[in-house]
Amino acid sequence: MREYSISKPAQERCVLIGQYILESGATVRSAAKKFGISKSTVHQDVTVNLANVNPFLCEKVRQILDRNKQERNVRGGLATQRKYAALK
Image (cartoon, rainbow, N blue to C red):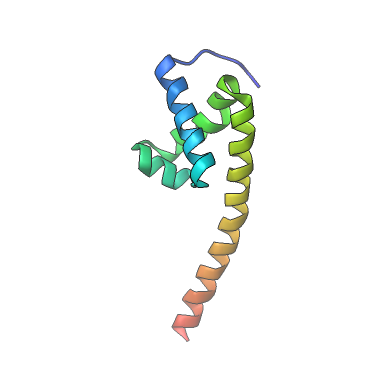
């Protein structure tokens, strides 16, 4: 992973977001809403920036994001199933 410097406020933000996701199991979308920033910024903060600031926390957050991604596929399938059941 390429290392580059990020500002102190950005470092603090990525740690705060990482801790929030770790404690709550939140999705990228819900974390973005909570912190008032875009989903892209949350994703960048917890995958790239957090790896440079706190690799241990980054790994824990990555596990939660991977789990959320797997669950998203199931939820999407269930939503589609309900949609077509309602149309019948």
